[in-house]
Image (cartoon, rainbow, N blue to C red):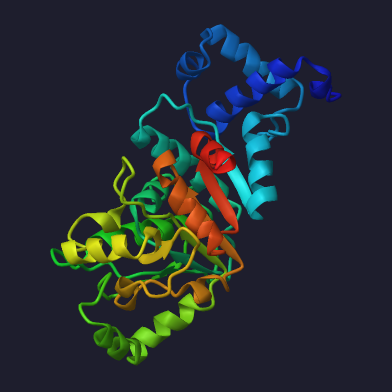
Length: 323
């Protein structure tokens, strides 16, 4: 069948693309799509048929004329990253927004993962959500590497981190390398001593030779709390120090300012996440984010040069574009 989709009414094309994205990539029902698009279920069915019949939908959604695609193009031009903008309305809660972004991210991630890879994963609320939606893909001789320690004053963090990593290992048939250290040491000298241990140096060596790194950005003000900002990871003195240093967020428990700088942030001297110079050596660095409150954190991570691929909801992408 000839593809005449671009000769059709542009508004119909946009509506068909949005309906297709919600149906095929976010697993929404036609009733839910009808409510979101303020139309009827039968209209949604016709939009999906139009999308299929005109070639807008093949195996994937082709969003060349979608508003989200325009935003993605703008973010690439401005920040030099490949952006995947997930259509999500402002009216949904941050919890639902996170799930919808995580589901889309899990499907996109499948295309990035292959055999003989070292895949670094930073634990956190967002990546935990992504892990629940992973699409199985069998690989060979690949390994999942934990990027930052997970212990805190109340727990070893082993159960939380190991469950998250196990989901990635099971989905991709990959081995899992845990990082059995706390998220933050009490004393920088303790970290230095640990980093000299051969068993720890082996994990650090894996982290320094990653093919793919997957992480979210932490923010102290998001509706869905960033994991590092609760559950006994930080104390009051730490919060005061972070505030005094002008910190806007973290990646893998390493904190940064709005300009992406990390120098002089004393908490980082005790942190166990990879130094940003190490992380930037990874060819593909995938950041998944949901929620406008994290826009300052994303801008800081972009300024630090940490992101090659950004998967983000539409309102947050718009906030980045307008800033």
